Length: 627
Image 1 (cartoon, rainbow, N blue to C red):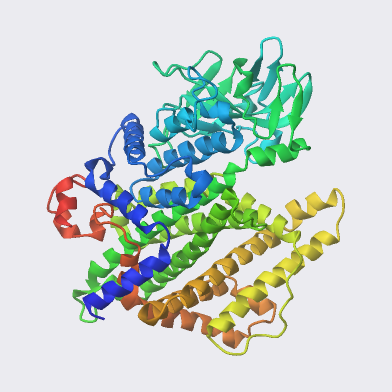
Image 2: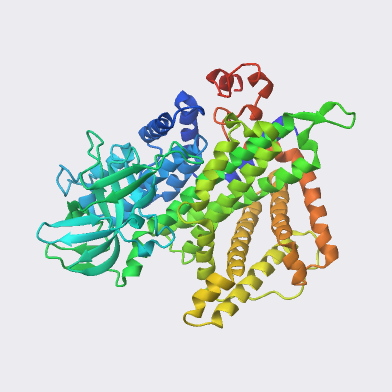
């Protein structure tokens, strides 16, 4: 394939891999590449790393790359910004997702006109369409955090202990942390930069617990950044990764906030203490006020997908240029030519592409659902399954890429360590992955089992056979889980679900998610033609084969595959890897990662880097030399 042909194929693949907001994405990338503010820096103090992340976010905000108001009109614009900004740094994108999605998005979706005004000066009913507080969020003049998680109730937030009790005489809420286990934990932006917090607490009125609600609270004075009286702030310190994020611990000692601090779109409380709500059950109120976590999961998946693409670009580009021992015994053979390297990296490339197609479908569906253009009854399942699949793939891909790059992968400047650290944050943020998969399986059990296909596949190696194998696993596991749970009642449900069938629960959710992404990949293939279609067909087949190989024992025990057919799976993977290898660079080009942001020396001229004596830092001179 000539260079012009390869460029054309890469463009077609790029439009399939990233089909939405392409001009918007280009502008964000152009901005990130023009300023040295976004050049990678590693060996800097913790305080400097945090300030750097804040300055970067402030610069992004000045471009108008995203607005909290996009959730009203086009949430996919926000998701696109998360993907592109993640090319720079996981700390930057993490602070951004809390500011715009968790904090800003919650104020937007749960608040009312009075909350969109300036609560501390302007009229509570600003003229026309003016929404000064939302504008301040967009401009980063009102930095916020999302105080949901408590140290003792991380995976059972509905049982949180923080209280908000109405003082009717004082027309105020009293926010209080009654015990250590109720401290708000892992609060991004909390340690240093937030002036505001959306605080989740049990709403108490005249001794009645009305369930968990959200309150917009000032936690620092805007001029001095000193904590407001009644607010305790602790710094969580240095972490495994994402140290540009200032995670904090918040506690409240009878903090007084106005009655209007209640984000009251669904539940209102008047000055006399009368409570009215559109949502009858307190537990359902919590599910509604925590609704922004759905888009948060999609934001994290978007950030993780970009990080995965960067890891693959670093490792594969290095593998193509790093020469080692060949047939003659000389160092004249690129390590990417080895089957070992291809088998390690190319299935990850294929999985990343196919999970990306699944994520694209989820982003579009959630955007339509959030704006009310098209309701999707399966949106919770899709959001809850895509985040774990993408985040786990990010961690696994980054770890394998680090290993396959040898000692070079261990250098901070080669970016893989930073991605590994971020991936571990993604795995447990906005819902622990395994817990989210339980949620997926639970939702699936409420659905009627699809018809289970009988009889084993006939044609070997076709897309139809692979689809049938993935469907067989999904439908068989789904039917088995529904059967197990239908046979138990009462207290036995918890015992069976949590103590006896954990593996079946996780496998059912995973099989559904992998089949979903396969189906979305088939839709993409149908939109392509020529060489791009052929490449994507091979990639999708490799993804499916890898899913099947991972559970080959299950297919054999279920007598779906014979031992002879099972042996063919590995051979088919070998064959597809050798077919995809010549086009791997074209697929990487389709990721559209700017050279200035793919600054890892091993992804570029690593010999030149080692001539420069940089002590492990990537200089502007080196970045410019690779353009």
